[in-house]
Amino acid sequence: MLIPMWRALAAAALLSTLSFGQNVYKQLATYSLPGDTGWDYLTYDESSDRLFVAHGTSILVVSPDGQKLGEFPANGAHGVAIVTDKGLGFSSNGRAGTVTVFDLKELKPIQEIKAGENPDAIIYDPYSKHVIVMNGRSKDIMAINPDTKKVDATVPLGGKLEFAVAMPGKVYVNVEDTGEIATVDSSTWKAVARWKLPDCEEPSGLAVDRKNNTLFTVCGNSKMLVIDAASGKVLATVKTGDGTDAAGFDPGTGYAFASNGEGTLTVVGKKADKWDVIENVPTQKSARTMTLDPKTHKVFTVAAEFNPPAPGERRGTVKPGSFKLIVLGPAK
Image (cartoon, rainbow, N blue to C red; front, side, top):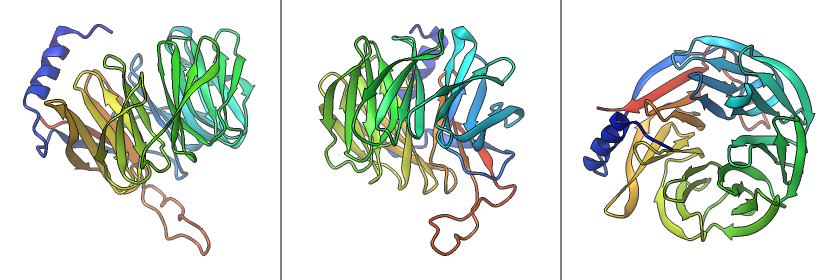
């Protein structure tokens, strides 16, 4: 990927002054969002400068300053994958067991595709040119051809699948209940490797630095593992905030991120060949998922306030009017 000169210079300036413990990110703004249901993945579409929020019973589309641009039904919405050159988006609908194909311009559903049990995370693999769906309960991934809108392959992986990332010829998938990363060859659609993640409980979020062939996986026991994507070797283990769920990587700055339900964003950087935490930026309790804009280096997360849980329930309902978008960005 070619990086414009001004972006490269800005990134170099950030990295040259990197000091662990300093403030490199800050909260820039918060915006109220509609809806009082739960949420899952956020997806930023760089081509249209829009955010797609999987919001319980729908996909909510907003601008980076919180303006509602559209919304359409999605039963048990988990995530969105964007296929820019086809003008299409794909949403995973866990409760319905389907994937909705929608028009990116009109923000209207076009077609439903039958998925496995509880389709959860969903990504677009630009190398194999397939939409990849992680079916959490049927323990397999599906490769959907965006041209035909049909499933070209199903790959059993034998575990509760979380987020995935794509590299040329490979798809890497977090397996939450076994504490592993599974690797799938995207030319044959066969599982080719499985790496046990040491002292990593329930890996969920996964991000990738494609230039340096590095993976970043976040664990339920408040850790981020930095992993060599060729060998599976763990290069570093760093402490994150509690309630870690999602991960991100900004190729322009070289920072990795973990969004934490405790109400922090952990910023991780590398200096003198050492990966470590730069800082934990305050967000809001429940802000456990994230996405980022690689042009502006802004990080987006969402949060809400909750009522006390009913007897026997793990979490209370969302307080009406409390759902919000939180925007963070470089402090300088």
